[in-house]
Amino acid sequence: MSAPGAQPCPLCGGLEIVAYHSDKVRDYVHCKTCALVFVPNSQHMSAADEKAYYDLHENHPNDLGYQRFLGRLFSPLSERLTANARGLDFGCGPSPVLAHMFERAGYSMALYDPYYAPDTSVLDASYDFITLSEVAEHMAAPGRELDGLWACLPVGGWLGIMTKRVRSPEAFKTWHYITEPTHVSFFSDATFAWLVAHWTAQGTIATLVTQGSDVVLFQKG
Image 1 (cartoon, rainbow, N blue to C red):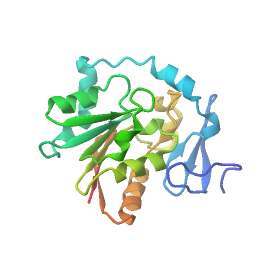
Image 2 (image 1 turned 60 degrees about the vertical axis):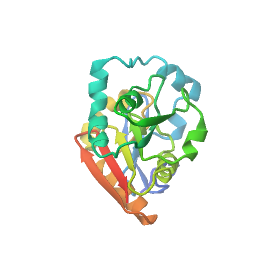
Image 3 (image 1 turned 120 degrees about the horizontal axis):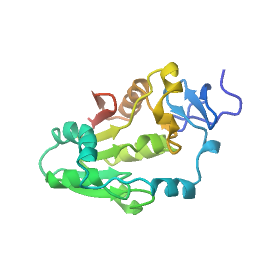
Image 4 (image 1 turned 90 degrees about the vertical axis):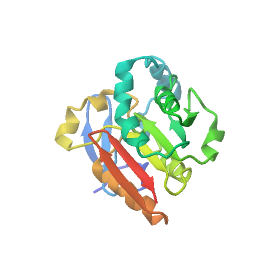
């Protein structure tokens, strides 16, 4: 039975939404169609509060530890790219370290972030690869945004996502990921499998490569 008054799933639009977990701050619900776990919109931070929270983050381009962290996405994606590939760092934040890593490797990069690089015209272009590093969990409307990014890829293009995955209701209860107040969408292996089927049904085969516990790569066609 769906949770009373539950909003449709922000990824697939499904209506079979059930309670998953609650803590002292927020509720978390589960879509039985695509397996996304999400925080209802009514419990999201305001845009102003979200921006103020992001302003507290300090990710410096010369931080070798942060570069090693991003390497979990950079390395498996870059080894699959052709020379002169063009990329988009979606949700780049105030310090686009990942984009700089790709530029140093010889790839041209465009940037988009709703707060720090808000030029939406870059979303009308085509890219050989798109990166979302610790971004998907912040998406209030992941279905609309991910479909839009998928449309920006040509056949053969790659979408690389770094986000930690839901494992079980028991693990979720003590998961540090849910204590971050701007995290509102939580993906699992089943959710990514749903995305593969969803995008394939649109007419171009999607394939999925899983890299460790927090990186997935989708190839279009």
